[in-house]
Length: 262
Image (cartoon, rainbow, N blue to C red; front, side, top):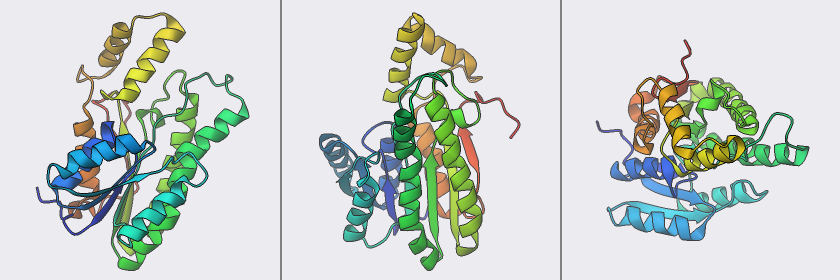
């Protein structure tokens, strides 16, 4: 399916690995003008080189979205390169694990800076231009934790829900201007982040790593982990010209693991 993104400037955050990189691959294949963001210079450069080797038009920006100046650095770079963003994919790593009472306020503040502030600042910068041009797409990568809180992930459970509430409100406000805003909720997906969570679970419970993965597979009706490419396909469709009547949605890509009606 032609996604109609060949003339669009697409900004993908957290794009040096995992779901972000898989999404960047699809946007590159569509011929988009691609800007990828990562906090690691070596990682973003390697990802950009890999995409260029496939014929992509891509620039990399090094920025830590948890830092006070991180979002502004992304905005400055994109505007310098292209003067606009037509598609924005917000995405970051996950906050530290821990129980509901196990974090002091500094940990909550750090998680808010990483997950919520970055999404708010980037949309505040890029969405007005989308409104002026009467076309735009915003897709936030969140987590199954929004629908089904995950044990020992209280920061992710709480702040990703906050991002969802912000995006849902934004969706209503900008829909008349031709801008759609949606979130994608990955389930148990074979990424480096899932490896990190498996290690943390093993350290916390003493359960063997493979048993942790077996439990996640058992909780998923399709009886396997997802792939970054499967999540990326949903992101790319929501960014496409075909998805103009879809907004304000939180789309689970989880193999059925959330088990909710809505």
